[in-house]
Amino acid sequence: MKKKLIYSISLTCIMLGACSDDFTEIAPTGALSDEALQNATGVDLKLTAAYSAMDGERIGRLGEGTAAGGDNWWTDVVSDDAHRGSTDGDNTALFQVETLDWQTGNNWFLGRWSALFGGVNSANAVIQLIEQVTDGDFTQQRGEALFLRGYFNFELQKFYGNVPFISVENLNNLEFNQPNPGPIWAQIEADFQEASDLLGSDVVNGRANSWIAKAFLGKALLYQEKWDEAFSLLNDVAQNGPYSLNPEYVSNFNFAGENAAESMFAIQFVSDDGRSYNGNGAGTLNFPGGGPLETCCGFYQPTQDLVNAYQTDSNGLPLLDTYAASDVTSDYDVESAEPFTPFTGALDPRLDFTVSRRGIDYNGFGPNPGKAWIRATFEDISGPYLPKKNVYQADEVDANRGTGGWGSDWSGINYNVMRFADVLLMAAEAAVEKTSPDLPIALEYVNMVRNRAKNMSYVQNEDGDADAANYVIEPYGTFAGVDFARKAIRFERRLEFGMEGHRLFDLRRWDVAEETINTYIQNEAEDIYKGGYDLKFKTYTEKFDLFPIPVNAIDQSGGILTQNPGW
Image (cartoon, rainbow, N blue to C red; front, top):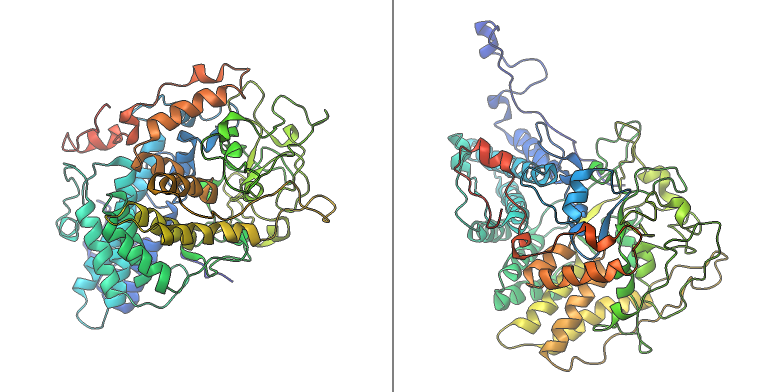
């Protein structure tokens, strides 16, 4: 059973002007004074609060709440992996995000910004308190706090590019209004490096250790194309760390597999009796609009382009250059009562653990009937598919289904911020790009991921006596050269991590987002055509490679913060 994290810890004293003098000296009931926190218990409380900030839920958060969570699902709708979902008129702000009609005042941009700076401040508060406590050894706790600050700042960096760095000294002096002259990679690297030096190597569910800090440092270096340094770190974690691939791919997305060998760093969600304050509130929109449990709200629908990417050739390998030339048959524009002939071509079996298609079992709830479970109409731009990785299994409903404030679902499924497959594919990427490319090790790591997909249990048909589709997957025999290896690794990342909130950031760091997304919009328009699909989109240009700094933050800074180029 997973350990429940404290949802939020209030460590502030509310000062009221009408209070007596005694009120300024005696902590109010239910609050802890600064003196009471200056001990090991206080450090652990504040550290727990910093971990709890990973889910985006915090007191005083600004902006759109469902944008705040650490799974970054809504960034996928900018990419070629996902549609916003639901009907075009539901949540106009997210419709604008998907269609590239971006405004600097959009609450989705502010929601993630606010949540991440809340996390930075929480991590700084731990470090600040440790520096005030005179007795005890807090090496581990300091390392965890530095790791968390590095993580929150890494997320800010990859979202917004030019962000202020808030130090403990700034916290001490209440100097939160800092400029944003450029990237903060140096500070992120320093935090991950020091965390790696301070932390122990023991694996504790939901907590950082030295291996995790080293992997995130490798990832930060990868994002900066410091390939040799990144490879050294990531290869060390791959070769010598305590993690491994789960035999079953689906174990990364269900209750039974939580905190298993592949899960390196995960947000520890849990469903509770009554309202689930420890559930995934930011993902509350992403269940079928109806479906087997009459859920809400039909958001986060996979694209036809993503589905097509899972096609394989007769050798069980991806169609790296031609996947978009033919479609996996969909039931778009087909009512559930009407006949439908499913696709019979060869497919990567990861497709049906990532995307719910008509006629294929939906996480144990039985075959997806198609349009009856899709909230969007045929005139909307959302398409005919449903997500699966974020939705609980039928036999785990009691363990994972929680309730939000308006009867919404707050899932208890952990979100893997990083899993071991990510380390393998990042190490493979760095192996190809480093000064002296190492194609054999890159091939080995990619094939470890593909062989897991080959050897896992496949989704079965309704009778349970055969595979649900024509699944054909094999490892690569060789990488013919650097160019082919690069293409294969990038494609493998999409197949392995589809609908996990990584795709947009990969496209941006590879400097291919503009070409890829504009091509995708035109291709998708051929399949979702009734509403004039492509006419609803603006063109992706270089300025979309960073989200705009929220205008609210710029206004509140008095002009100290500057806007990203193009906005």
